[in-house]
Image (tube, rainbow, N blue to C red; front, side, top):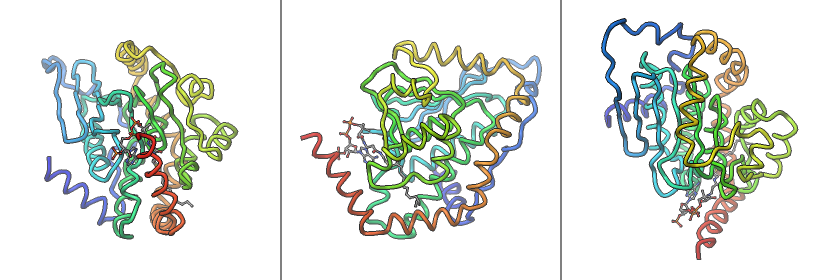
Length: 305
Ligand SMILES: CC/C=C\C/C=C\C/C=C\C=C\CC(=O)SCCNC(=O)CCNC(=O)[C@H](O)C(C)(C)COP(=O)(O)OP(=O)(O)OC[C@H]1O[C@@H](n2cnc3c(N)ncnc32)[C@H](O)[C@@H]1OP(=O)(O)O
């Protein structure tokens, strides 16, 4: 596992563009399972920050974020996430993934702000490439991707949910979700914005992005940021039912449709990846942005006392 992580990290950081494997539609992957072979009911693999359980009889993997205190997306987390996605994408038995959190009340707190504070240009480059890689893999996945948002999900956490095919959120107004970058004095990159627009439409996205709005679950439903609210104790049951509904269709039709809907947005980042990294590193290196991020971190810490 450590060797695989190191290899992927090297590939992400050195080669520039990691080949996104199996992005083209896979034709009926489940149908290729040899007939008559007994299926192991469940397989699992776990890294430090993400637990994956694969149910081979349903073809559905559950990916649980388990990086306390708040599942923030640092370089190690992003690398593990990409490796887990790659493993599942290449597993013909896997047709769908449920992405959720093992940390109570938090889905993910978004990008780890400490990765964007007081570091070198090389570090920002490596970090941003990993953020891009995570999104490219998730948004282009052939699998059915279902976000079960069982806690707050600001910024990068919201991006993960938005990149899935369907979002179920726990019906709790204390949990918030949204792209709140503007509140930190930073700007959501164009591909965060495009992903958001593809889910909620131009008007809601523009207003929400300018205001950096974080929506309590009921409002998130109203604006279409999530598809359904479900009592927390019913999330698992609901996720299983929704996944079964999506998997009832032939894979190839769903995959080609998904690719058609998302291709333009994906292609744009692939074509402008290096430019996007340069924009990020020069933006985040500005003293004014560093100051905003430091103040935001201080505010988070003060909030406790
Ligand atoms: C021109 C444009 C060109 C290019 C683009 C340029 C720039 C774009 C750049 C970046 C895009 C970034 C997207 C992001 O994801 S930024 C991250 C945004 N995240 C947040 O705003 C969330 C902040 N956190 C919270 O609101 C809360 O922590 C919470 C609701 C998630 C959880 O609340 P709790 O009360 O349960 O927990 P806390 O006590 O607040 O936190 C515990 C602990 O964790 C630390 N922490 C929280 N969030 C983060 C984080 N995102 N990164 C790092 N650390 C985080 C928090 O400080 C506490 O630490 P201590 O225990 O006090 O040490």
